[in-house]
Length: 78
Image 1 (cartoon, rainbow, N blue to C red):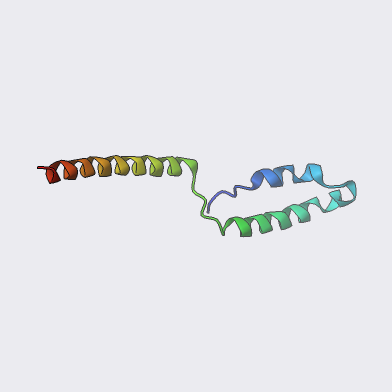
Image 2 (tube, rainbow, N blue to C red):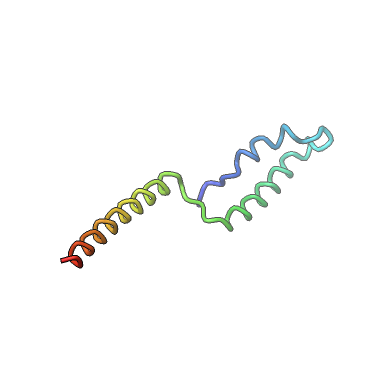
């Protein structure tokens, strides 16, 4: 299971609860956690390391394409 990217909200939730709601903090935290988890699953989050690896692969592919286009242009000009 992917890490919930909204955990920082849940970690700070207790500090924002008004005093009358403090006794219900566990229930509220569980409810918000469920809501955030449900909403976050609609997004396709990937870990930063994976994003950076894919970005590097894309840059390498773009460079290869540029090199091939240059070779094609060179061959076509002969």
